[in-house]
Amino acid sequence: TSPRTQQPINRLSFLKTSIASAGIALTTTATPVFAKEIDPAVKGTKQDPAYQACLSTCIFECTKPKGDEQKSRAECIPECKKKCATTKEQLMTGQPIKKD
Image (cartoon, rainbow, N blue to C red; front, side, top):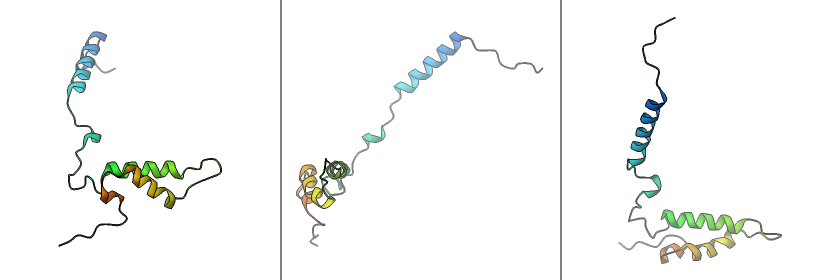
């Protein structure tokens, strides 16, 4: 048998270490992923993550079969754009022409 190089840990030591580690982990201020700032150039455009998420969810819910009827994506997109759009650009089809 080999000699033990470490002392066995007792419950009190284990609890103190665990509570201290948990306290440190809970008090650190890491920025959550969902709190990421949106690029101001994208806000209010068709690339706005909030607009895209709303549109995606709306189209998914709209195209689900409801009884005997089921709408196509083409029927749902105009309804969902009206529901989710916050700017005129988001309501448009295509991209606006940029004047140089």
